Image 1: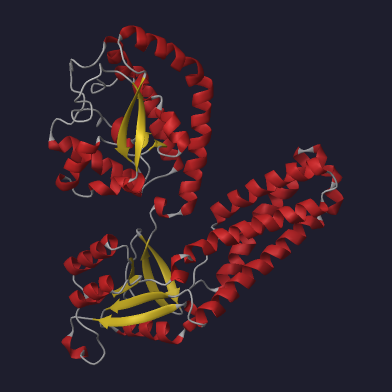
Image 2: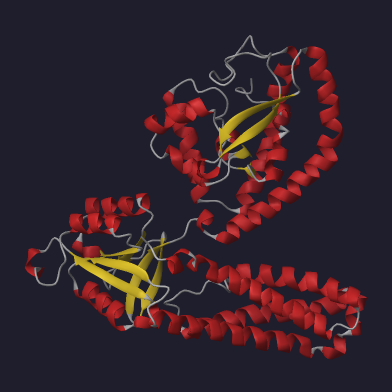
Length: 453
């Protein structure tokens, strides 16, 4: 079992960010001569600091980060923050009240700098005492692999605990703890956090097997390259002293910033839609649906959300009530669909109540579409990587839907391509991609899609 301190080590970064924000606001409150100005400037500086730190990667500091990197981060963050801070005075007249006390920014920078270095060195001391550690194994038989083992054993402040050296080279009987296959079994049984693999010690099939194993068991994978290796764009280069290490680039949804940006956009966008559109459109649809057929206005169905957490997905009812609604999805010329239901489904207006699902946090504006539970159980066993779709929140619309893969699944390639595009979205997310998908969704709603029935 992993120790409790390791379980909560992921909170270090959010706590440092929170401390910095509190410190900035305390300085602003102390120096502001007007309460309203303090609140005004406080909100501006908080958003400014968070936005700037996101783009400068100010809080991307790791246990192996060099002190020169800290200085570089401080310089980049402060340069942008200072410019934007003093730009505030020229935008708001209220800024003149404290313009003479411009040393406010210097107190902020001084305090943040002290905090940055203090937390940096405090964590090193803490790790040197044997706390906040990560367990690692090394696979390989080259000098680079042996050197990285020496780093783990000698540089205690990095907070690594070396658990074994694994290689298929039988000449290393004294040094190694077992062969590569035994190393993978050892990793799973002993909750290993990271696997370091020397690139020349394994063949391509073995390397793929190790990477797949790491992904399946949520173990971080690192590649130790040869000195003249050509680095892939899918890897970032790090240094442990003078030893280069290749680390797979984090996927967008593995970063807390992505979830923060996406959630903020979801809240703002869904609130605008609910306020400006649904507030008057839903009552009209309620009247039309009630006149057209008997039954409730809203149709609720249990769907799988992020990490398999289930929720009620809302829709405007487009079918007559039937016992097969949770078992059989709609098909072309489906007799269950009501007269108004055909219009609702063709224009996707039946999906509008899902903006409430977004506001509640069960869904996102853009993401993999949630399937019926009976379909999910079927596809899990039939489609490779299907469950990866559950690593993010399901969406009202998605890349697969605007690419023509929506509605009824007639042949296997329909669901295979849908999953392929969903995974592509997860691995290549960007805010601009979300905006593009939303724009295409609106375009298809107005134009109409062949499978919208």
